[in-house]
Amino acid sequence: AAMSAAGPRRGGLPFALYRSGTSRGPFVLERDVPARGPARDEVLCRLMGSGHPQQLGGLGGSHGPTSKAVVVGPHSDPGAVTYDFHQCGVSEAAVDHSHGDCGNMIAAVAPFALERGLVLA
Image (cartoon, rainbow, N blue to C red):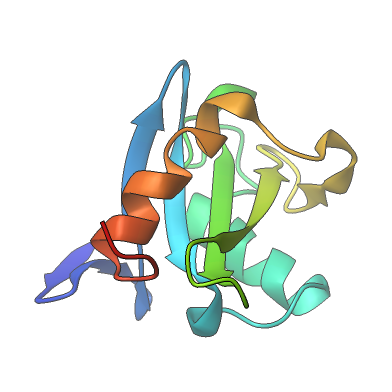
C-alpha cells in the first residue's frame, strides 16, 4: 500500500487499517467507494485480495477475522455516523452480507470517524 498525506492508499483508495479485538481490516470513507451493491463489494474484495486462499494481493489475512472491511459515512445527526460492515471472502471474491455486523470492528468506528473529521471530539 502506498502512503499519502491522507494516509495509506491501495489502488487509489484511501483507507485506515485497524485491529479491534480479534478482528482486523480496512476502514474507508463512504464517499470513496461506490454505493452499496455489487460495485462496492468488488472494490472491497479487491482491497482485501479476496479470491486467493492467502489473499496475497491485498490486505486480508487469509481467514475470516482478518478479512473484514468497514465503510463509514456522515449521518444527518452531526454526532453520529453510518457504518456498513463487509465480511469479505478469502478464496472466493465475494462479500457475505448475512453477518450484519461485527462487535469488534464496531469498536473502531468512533476512532476512525474522529480521525477523519466525521464527528467532533
